[in-house]
Image (cartoon, rainbow, N blue to C red; front, side):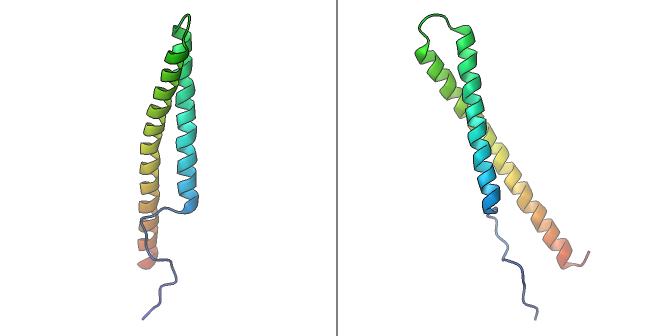
Amino acid sequence: GRVPDERPLSALPSPAARLAAFVSILVGGAAGGLIGYTLVRIQCDGDCALPLGIGALVGAIVAAGGMSVVAILVLRAIGEWHEVERRERSIGR
């Protein structure tokens, strides 16, 4: 029989892909925090420390949550793409 020279199939994305997803979630959260802070700053007069903090926190959480969904979908799509390529190579296309 033939000995496979490829690594075994794994659903775990490569370390570089996981790092890129993590960094994108952090950047998205920072951008969301900045947007939330700015939206409150534009609308608030007087002592706004607490509302500014809440706006930044909510913005960061919402943006990071949304970015994590996108990152997971991208990582799954990459995994499926690699699986399709592996299948095509194995049948000799």
